[in-house]
Length: 304
Image (cartoon, rainbow, N blue to C red; front, side, top):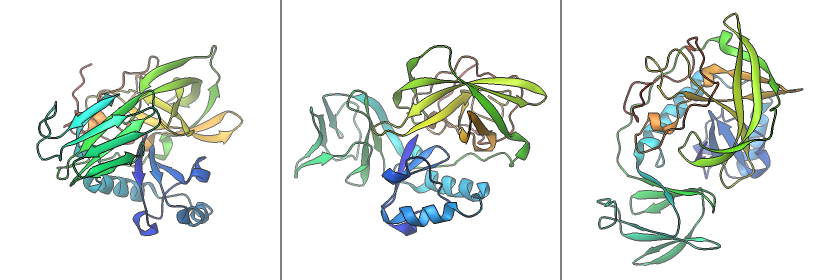
């Protein structure tokens, strides 16, 4: 997941969806985590008592975020694992022309950004302005990533398939045969330790489908999402060749909804600066899933 931040109520559209992280002031929209101010919590909770959000509105708002946010994946110019000390600026390696010189240091208890005018503590998973640029340290103290965002960028978000209610599927989550935790890349190109949640069993296109599900943690928090990274017959044609992510919605009694209209591209589909997750074994579907986010080039090219 990736994090958007809001300081004022007007910064958030009315369709933001609350998830289990409500008490921490976090909301999930299309797999993107929004950290809001406490004053927004009651207002958003009231919204949840009304009708379900309109997917077309969510899509347009997400596209607007991709085009204009200071931490849009289209704006990223550097994204790498980080430990110890990292020198930033035009004389660094790699050189980032136009970025003010600074040094990022990871200590035992805190992150510090040193500049000529002084130093400041950096909060993990929150963007820090550096001149007109922004620096984001994501992940946790064991696995940190630094992403640098340039102030001016071009963004041409891909479109979406028309909403298809037949691709909102209810399924049963079968528990795993054995406990398994493995490192993998999330949607935002950050490595996490994901726990195998089991296999989602559902009926789709007149056949029984089984898809592997992992619990994907939000780095630096206790939020977890039951996620599927899948491939289908549209990959390399209408959708991103590496695959797409889908977050499951719980119904209770081990039953979940897989709404393929909400299938999302990993960030490497927007910008080749991000690494791509490897396909999850067992999640290649031999049918086309003509729902969710499309792809029209510009990302990290993946063959196969």
